[in-house]
Image (cartoon, rainbow, N blue to C red):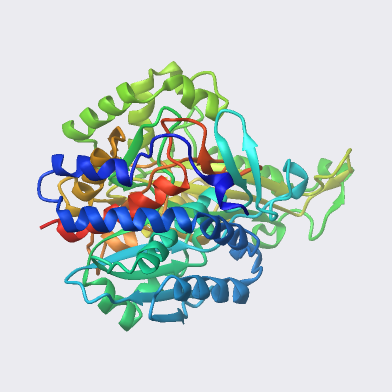
Length: 508
């Protein structure tokens, strides 16, 4: 790609423009640092074409854990990305599933910073896309700018590529990293991280991560209005299949039979529907599993205040447009919907599979029916307790034969507002002139509890500016050059990570 085609014409959010503003933030400005930032910015500009190409090449090399697709290639590609960025030690870590990649970059600094990557992506159907999902094409998106489109573009290869670009810029400019970096890259995030804790338990990984002041996952955290979000936590997620079959039930056909036999033969599909119906209350939304809310920690007054502030800074219209919805549950207000999003655990049906699902009809009585279900958990719920309660509920309601097969999952995560990691993020965004809100808890999930829980007990969260969209959906994209003056492009995103590393080093 031609580097000049990605040169931003608007005022930079970070870099040279931010250097003068650094003096406004106590305890972080220095003449030496200002000179370093300017040199790094020049390197970022010079390396922009290579940074874009790096993201494109990564999109073209997908690892899909759900399909065991290109596992070895994914490990090799992630390892090469780390080595090219300057990590001295890189190795694959066995997990019992898809390997993780662990890398360390020791700059001889007093502090260590943890970085979490995911290198796997969701499945895709090329027929649903306007461009081939693995081409990583640069397209002009009206009202957004130049974007790279492809599976994994924003979730998470684009933001992770921006972080790698910062490391390349340090190296190219001859500037020493202000912190040492421990990188742990997972290859099973998109199947709810069933084995990731095993990677953390590796003796070398555990010993190194214990030295870190915190952990971030790079993200594209700006809304179209330019506001960024600092997330203090995330819901946990548990993925499972709930299965009704003639084999487990002892009733119904041993194989699919003609549907006329339903007059005298039991249906595992209807049994599954009946079992699923017991999981939900009359409103069709509130979980009815006995004891499900037992360990739910109510929102504090401070958390409710943060949600109210986020409601004022956010746009309900933009949110509804992005989701394609006209109203919230129970016609609640914008602020009420945000409280619910942060505080409510859920049991969701992702998909139902049974019998014939092709074009037209087929007169069969299926012998098996499967529901793909996920639970979202809030503090102080745990994966194991929630699964046990769901199983006990089905057995008590007369469905002991209905199988609950957990395929992955983890608990919720929470990081204190006053932690050094959060303060560093606030300082970087303030210095960049990016308005932000503190988000009590993301409704989406990532395995941050592996870092915030035992045995590490580290602050952990997402960080990044810029924007993207379509995660897990067709036409996923990540902004390279923004046409919206309020939203950062790749250069500014890269500089934000460079500034964050300096800020982490400066925090007490």
